[in-house]
Image (cartoon, rainbow, N blue to C red):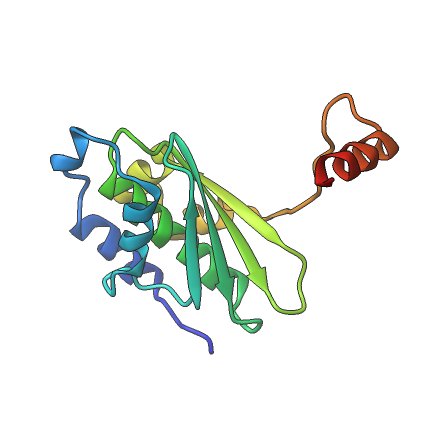
Amino acid sequence: MFKSVNCRVLLVSMLISPFAASATLAANLTTSQLNSILKDPSVKVSATSNIVMGTGPTVTVLTEEDAKTSEQDLKIDALFLSKALMEAAPGQIEKVKILFSQSGREGRFIIIDNKEIQDFGHGKISPEKMLATMRFADVEPERAPGLEPRRLYLTLVAFAR
């Protein structure tokens, strides 16, 4: 299932709904509220599911995509997901890390910050340049600082008892 999105349509959609102050400035949105935002039908993405983790200033979105979704379409989804969250929680969310899960592929992610979304929305960056500058990074396991693998295993075993 490929979606073809003209870069002009992408730019227009970003310009149509400019960042606006809202009542959410008074109180931070909860993770549950942020998840509800991404379930709204006006957020046009191809992902089959999205889960927000965290409340800011950096949030992570776990998204499941069809295995055939192109890299450009993943980048467009990342833009729309980031834009929706940042607009709904201005001042609360500065960066969005979108973690993509696709059957048959290793996990990958893209990080988008508020300035990139604002610059793009105000026409300072063209759609082509915005998409070209977005880079996927591979998900890699992180080691716990100061713990050797054997020590970590022993710690986990002791904790499980």
